[in-house]
Image 1 (cartoon, rainbow, N blue to C red):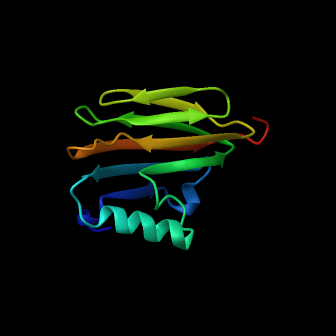
Image 2: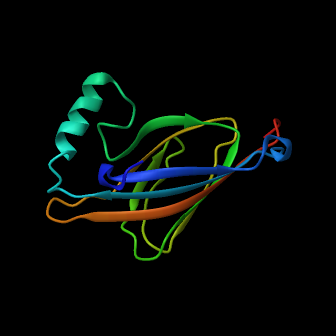
Length: 135
C-alpha cells in the first residue's frame, strides 16, 4: 500500500502447518492530513461504491467472535476511539494497550483521532489468537 494513500495494514501469520491455535500479528500505520487533496474525493468514492471502511477514518461497527485481540499503540502515536456492543468506550493513545475478548460475538468500531488543522499519525500492533470453540 503506498504511503501517499494514508496508511498500511500488514498482516503477519504463521504457516498453515503451525496455525493451531491461529495467530495473527498485524501492524497498522496510518496518517490523516486535512490538507491532503485526495482525502475527501477518496472518501466520497469509497462511500458511493459501498466499499467498507473507505469513507471513514477507521472501522465502522463490525462483528468478531472467537478471538482474543491485544492492541498496543506505539509511544508518540495519536489515538483511536473504541466502542463496542458490551458497553465499552475508550480512547487509546501512545503507550496504551487494549485487550478484547470477543467470545461468542461482539460488535465494535474503532475510529482514528483526526484534527482539522494538522496531520495525525498512529502506529499500532495487534496480536489475534483464536479461542477454543467452547469459549
